[in-house]
Length: 76
Figure (cartoon, rainbow, N blue to C red):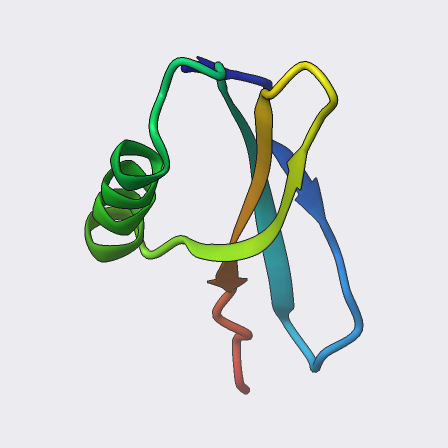
């Protein structure tokens, strides 16, 4: 399993809401069940949710995870 640098992207879902994205790559020797367990663990303990999965012709799974970042807005 390899990990690319984290990306933070601002989307217009509402005031003060940002999404943090993380790209994770799994080699083809990881079974579907193992990948599912690893992603489930990241979701339960890190607050990540699945954004997209792409399986390349080489058999690698490229997964994009996301989680919401809510920044507190100071009120007067």
